[in-house]
Length: 459
Image 1 (tube, rainbow, N blue to C red):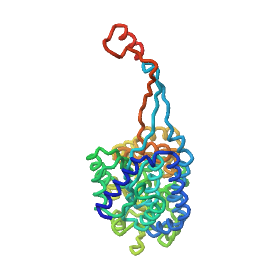
Image 2: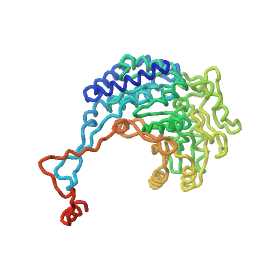
Image 3: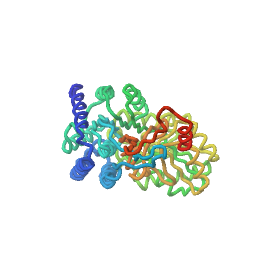
Image 4: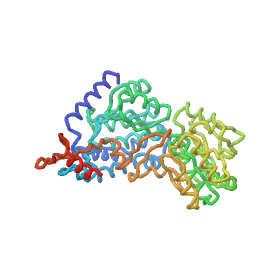
């Protein structure tokens, strides 16, 4: 698709939005129901594409991609009529007689740019929220997951005319051109480096943005934790999708007294969940491409591997790997890993652990394994991060009842459920003033009596 075609699509979407076709709740519900039915009917094709791009099993694809999208669709279809209502608020006595209310209104034409690691869910989930809010949308999926991007394009084309929802395929050139255009809102999921570029380009048009980025998400394990259960849940969260998950535990920060036992439990769990030779497990998945495969291999210091470390370059597979002892200066701690490597560091007390985490860029997620309620309160109140779990990993994003988003360097804004609807909605603050009464005290000439009345009303 060339630049002229993209520009024409944007213009058509702007005209379609201006026509009011997306504003009624009935039209929005019809769009969401049509999308849901299409996803259900094409579930096998979607899962086949995810297996081609990332080696995901059918179970993992449903649990982490299509099932999540269907859950968000069901939530929006059920609650949209309530979300889209005007909300009356209290009117100050000084504005008597009038009705004050907040009117939810869509932004207009939005751009959704999605990544390759969960290419279906991270494209369609924000689209669901954007459509529920009444916007038109231009979707730009990742060029690194071509099979899924093609399925998304076919799905969107089947469900919507281009002037309502359109897909633009391509790479950096198309991304740069899209960011030079004027949109009413931009929703971006991806790396911090590209997120900075998106924010800079959006600022040229004063376009509001949501940035869902990433970072090194810590997993704290204190000496009161149930180590066997902690290991089981950490292994699940870390090695899901071969570690290519933005909210995966990036590293473990455990109390020095439990390190050896925790390592023993983690290696036992890797064998239980993935087998003695994970590279032969057909449900394990693979790294997205050669570039990231070699980048991840470059982070492995062989002398620090306590389990794993094997790789299959033909299949782009790296075994679940545990690294210890690790220091903050090691290469694996200098960037977000985004792969199946689990470094283990230690701390002596929680104050030290919190200080170490807070001295670094704010992460997208934080996980804490502990049985100590005081410790849980201390860590969750003192550390700044997007979201997280106590005694589990990653599941906090799998609900439409809470928003999901980053903090500081890990992003801005959030989505899912009502918060997702709010993200793509501008709330107009309105006062409907009645005409049968007009208090004179705000009009000149001012008198001492009027001043006294104003002070009484506004105090």
